[in-house]
Image 1 (tube, helix red, strand yellow):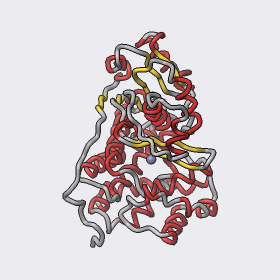
Image 2 (cartoon, protein in one colour):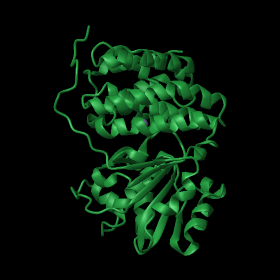
Image 3 (cartoon, helix red, strand yellow):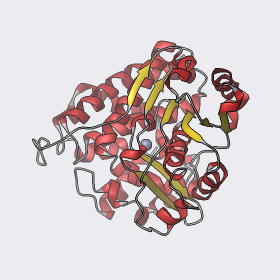
Image 4 (cartoon, helix red, strand yellow):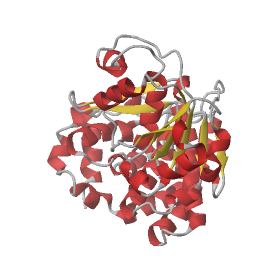
Length: 373
Ligand SMILES: [Zn+2]
């Protein structure tokens, strides 16, 4: 029996501003989507430059038009992004290309509003000092994901980490949407096994988090359920046969669809739990936001939405059980240290989206059960 809100309100709306183009080899057509004047800032990692991807962009556009910023590391830091803003402000940049995973796309989305904003150390002022400044303009971003997990290519938010203050910030709003998500599954073929695992877990987490979410709509539910259906089929294949292009394409689609779902609902309690684990113990995001999913589901499965009791959700839970994420968590953090962070796990803008109430005691139980091997 369903005791909570049985269905979403009839009053809802949907808007996502990202154009999506998907094709094998789409990356080779990058130049077709870029402004034909000014310089293009390529945001990526040193690893992709080593593997020749930055060179391919230079070949398409010409050396004079491309500025390569390939210093992005996992979990982009507030100070580093402010420094990058200072460095690139003097350049006549007309567009940004982001090639990489969630951290690269988040960094590019942040730079797209800090570069044209006109004042120095904008993130320090806006996020750390909470100056109340609103972003006024943005540069167009083309997001080319190389992982299948964050969905950042279609969301209007970007995460900025403040290592100094041990805090996680969100830069959000319509200006943060990339202009274009360019999906080329070939770019995900070389993703190592552990990253394939963790990023796929993030996509699954996004789907479930948008289903047990107070902001869910018929549209977000449709995206989230299709994302789960695709992931159930493709996830075991990409782990076992990483070179399977069809399965890689399906995981890429699942990740993008889950991104569309959370672009409407945002995430919920599992993500709220995850952030202090990443900040204090460096637990990879996809693992930190997924090790609790089974226990959260058990708590809310009869209270949120009928969808949570459908076949494919049950299959998702079986799949998660088979992965024994408690063991994975153990590589990064001890149970008592996880429980010790409970006070920081109630980020109101995330935990408040969760369909059920959650108090300290209930959360402690979820954590303990989730970490039991
Ligand atoms: Zn996530």
